[in-house]
Image (tube, one colour):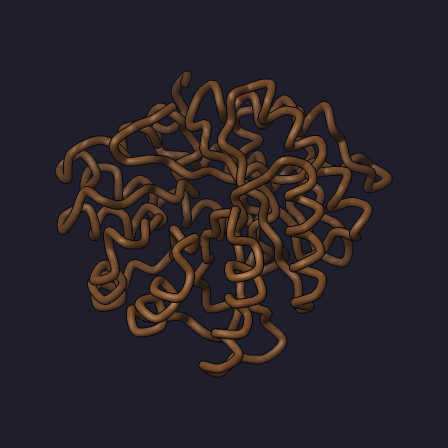
Length: 300
């Protein structure tokens, strides 16, 4: 669903009680997101457990995502998270064979890459697959955040590096990154997006906590600054509710929170994560759901 300010959303992975991939629940989720929020959907980001799946699970889920994307006119993006560059390259190759041409990259996180290693990483991904388009997820979990200096160099070397995802709300970092716009499209999560939209329209919303209510999320992405300022305290209250539900850190992985948010749309959606990671209990989810600000509890 094309908009002047595109919304990029994740689909998380549902697991059965014996930790098999639940394709029916996954298909229902992609259809729900495509119908109610955006057709720009990706899997296997930090919330999508791309770091945790086996190669067989990766192939099974990527194949299912390819099928449901075709059926629902989705623009799909495949995340390729791994500590191993050869594994990342092999996953891109298999994704290409399934028809994917858009991929999300994160730097390997075992140790912070130096400049030469960053250049080698992008040469072996963007440089190797010239017929594909790449988004880079710039997050501290990888132990190195790229700045406008690196992005200018990489954008010249790799025309198919097209976008960057980032979750910062630091105005200094946002201003620095936006100096590389519009050559690179930047997608910011809600708090950073609200700040950056005061400076430019040429960005997208990496929707996160606003998925608690698809209508409100769409309004946040496309509305004016005053509307976003009204929503910010409510979004911070949702974050506080998620943290409170986690009972002082009993669970902490991104996917645990994203599955709680999506479950607001599908009460049957399973919350479990692949071991060893802990997820929310039914009681914790209920406590979070009941903590939502009033405007975010209404029918979508």
